[in-house]
Image (cartoon, rainbow, N blue to C red; front, side, top):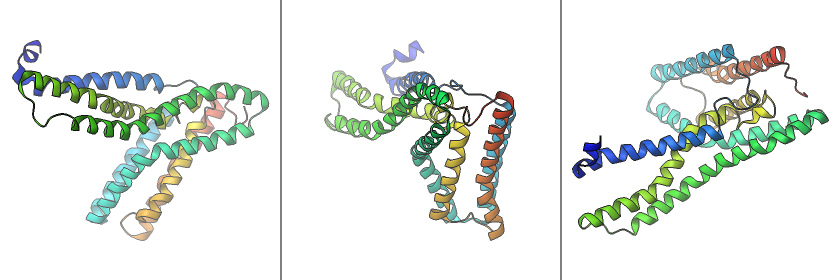
Length: 266
């Protein structure tokens, strides 16, 4: 590796992966610090997690099977568009759903439980602000990187010009890609654990997931309609997705109440 780095003719092949690896590594470390895999208050149920994974893979197989059997290119384009919309709007809808659920649980909690929840509200809110601040930085950093690169000359003259061009490119684009890596590593735990709100109430992630899946089902029906295929089958697939997620969420809450003493007002 040292020999390759010492050969300037191979820098274009070795330096970008090394720099990208370091950026991804530091971004992953920060993402795990802000959104740990097992946050405070999270109670892991291996059986529930196993069934959720089976349900997710089954939904993926059914969706692909319907597209392959009854869909056309327009259905494929609609599915891709719906996936991108979910990827873009999921964090914001999750935040709104989490705020709604927190307000309802805070209103229903006993006075003693409210005081305990209030102490955990700021850390969860801080992690949510960190996540959405990163999302806000993406277009700003992209615009700033483009402006910075436009100030460079179109061609690099000599070794000094090449080093200047590479240095400016790194300074312009490294923050943007670091934020992108951070969001990639943070999005899964953030959405899975509802922005670390399990510290307020262990049932919050399941409740937020239930609300979110019905919101996405309604938006998908209004924008793309039912899935391709015969109407009875399409209706069953459309209703079966959110109903199965809701059933798993309530099963998880039931296990939390029975095994760990979690109460709505406790």
